[in-house]
Image (cartoon, rainbow, N blue to C red; front, side, top):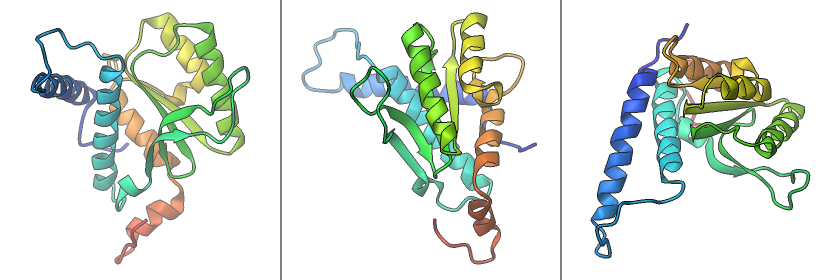
Length: 194
C-alpha cells in the first residue's frame, strides 16, 4: 500500500479553497458589477486543476521525475464517437496508458452520457490503456454503480466516500498503471528526465 501525501478530505478542502480563491479573483475584475458569479464549468475546471496539481506532487513523492511532462490535459482522442461528428477530449492523459475523466459532480445523468463513456472506455481498452474516473462526489448509489459498470470498479474513485480514502486508491491505481520503464528510470542513481 502506498502512503500518499494527501487524503481525500484534504483534496476536497483544497478544492473548496481554490474555488473560493478563483471567485475572489474574478470579483477583482474592473468590470465586476456585484452579481453572483455563475460560470458554467468553473467548478469542474477548478477540480481538474486541483487533481492534476496534487497528483503531480504525489508522483514526485513516489520518485517519478518530472511527472508533469507525462501529463496532457484536455487530450483530444484520435477517433470520433458514434452519432457525434467531433473527437472527444479526455480531462487528463498520463503517458500512453492512462486516461482520466475528472468530474466535480457525477457523470451519469443521462443514457447518452453513459453510452459516450462506455464507447470511450472500449476504444481506450482496445489500445491497451485504462480509463479512470475520479469525482469529488456523485449522486448516490445508483450513479456510483452505473459509473463502476462503465469504468470498472478498480477505475472509479469517489472522494466523498466516508468508508475509504479514494484519493489514496486513485494514486495507487495511477502508479500501478505507469509503465515499468518510467518507474525504473526513477530508480537509477542518475535518473533521466522523461
